[in-house]
Length: 69
Image (cartoon, rainbow, N blue to C red; front, side):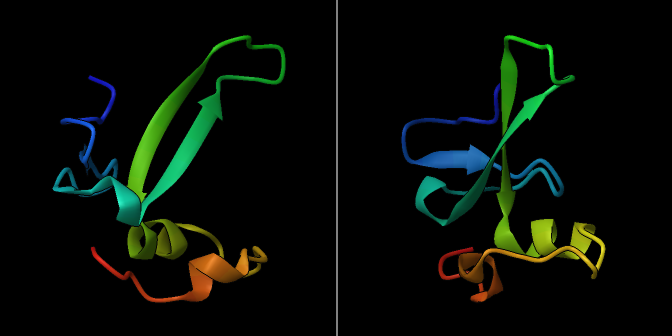
């Protein structure tokens, strides 16, 4: 499963709950730098930010509260 329920809803890779795609942090993950293919994961913004170490500098859009999720 790729995390997409339909064109509007996705599943959070941290909590497993569905929520609107427009509210998702979209993660493209390559297994390593030589990989040609990647996996797409979706996350609630708050779950993604909580999972990162506090020393990681975040994009300003990630500092805003979850609008829809």
